Image (cartoon, rainbow over all chains, first blue to last red; front, side, top):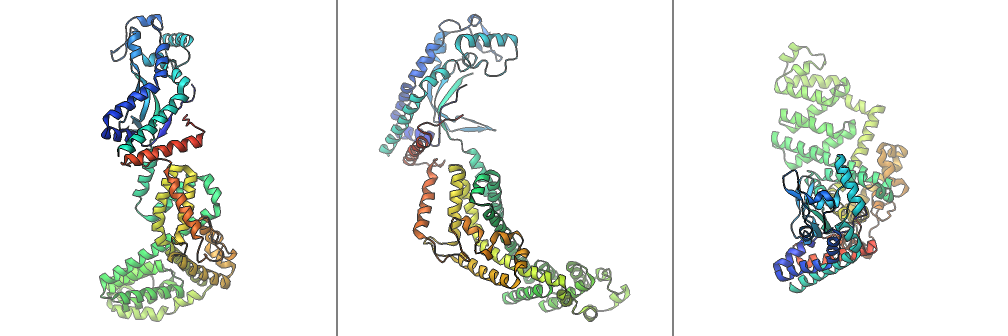
Length: 177
Length: 387
């Protein structure tokens, strides 16, 4: 997989929270602006997901271990599940794991997301699973098939625009103070 | 399961914070400095090589000296407390006792860290400084003549003073049980004095005794040097924090720059003038040089690794050169004040690569986010790549 591209910084979450205290409308505008910035990525990822089931078996019902349905494939629902997010939540520690570190990003929240996007990234123990990975890779490429692939195409522009957005946030915060 | 692609993430400084927390929990300045040196040795080999292994060794030696001084100070305090608890001695008398112990150690070659606990034990039994002095003399003579340790002899005599002569009988001094039981303690002491008087001084004149006395002279100088650094060590604990913090923000280069700045700060004040620690250090260097001119090479060899590390005879001292300036035989009276301030400002400005967590002021956060972005851009040619 290609190298990830991101900015690691301190204080962005605090700045967003401060902006929310000062001007809630401006804070919501940041979310809208970020959605605009990453819209090429979201649109491309949505365009890459197929209108018909990616593999024929995905047209049928398939429940996960918890009993939650993963399939049948629903193209519209899957597309709607790809969306940008802005999070000012404080990071939380669970043992060695720290959650909520991401501040700006893109997420894919449907149940089929990890099957389509990441299958084949780790070990595949069963023959049927290996066959599924082979077919997915043949049709849609290596793992990181949809949103990661789309993000890589636009990463430079997205990062530059996100930097500008953060500068704008800071200018607003300073102005309001 | 959902998939997330983070574009901007929060810097997770938990590792650095944890290190700083465990550092601040160390219960003594000495431990803190040792922690800083150990951590430096483990994590910054390249940096240490750059600033000089000899200087690093000198720093460790200075730490040893300071530990000696701290132990000496503690033992003085314990003796003073014992004397106060057992007698009505004034501070002046306690101070005189310290002087007496110093004279005894130089005359007999028995170190003060052995003499003080022995003296304290005797005082607890005799409740009198004069009697304690007399009994110490006898104990030193008996110890030198019989080869028994001073603490064993002192313990036996103290217990005999309390009325229990069993331990004294076991020393093998030629007194039988019945004699010890029937004879008053003062009489026994008089007998011992007649029998062993002068043994300690005679022992001190032998080759081994002379070397012991020489070692004590050197150790006293080491402790003297340690006393100079003792107040500085407290400061060094803060320095360790500053260096660890700089390491968290700017990596090894930041830590080394901070350490250089902080060490320079140890001996000079803000205007580049020698501070009290620097002046005392210069006095001690004079004493070292005098002793070296009298005792020659054996003085440096008695100092052990510190002799090579300090290398006073060659006109250099390791630690100050570690601090980024060159000392000749002694520290200069002043340093370049303008340069000093420039380094300080540089050090302060250099600590802004990451925003300190806990800053609540949004304006400060905004300013720092700009700084971070600009620095990341400059450093990485526009983008930051995280594998």
